[in-house]
Length: 111
Picture (cartoon, rainbow, N blue to C red):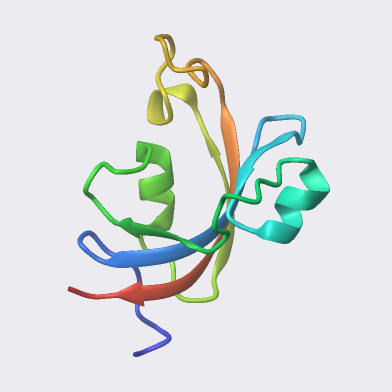
């Protein structure tokens, strides 16, 4: 696998992430150590990189878009407005919230 491979639509991307609200409060992470230090640790959860097939709508739009073009071992911090997250309003508890993610791609698999 080329380290220069850039994530594109249809690729399966493995990504470690830390999700925060503006102000720094962590609401979710794929990393056990971070979850423990944020007081979010759940022993029933399996902490490993999230696998996302880009362009399939399985994650929020802003998360999907942020991964496009990233390479293995690349890190990025993104701010996702409500329109590209859970919407301005609605029933989702995260509706209307701006979200921040720190992303690190661990693997990219082409179909």
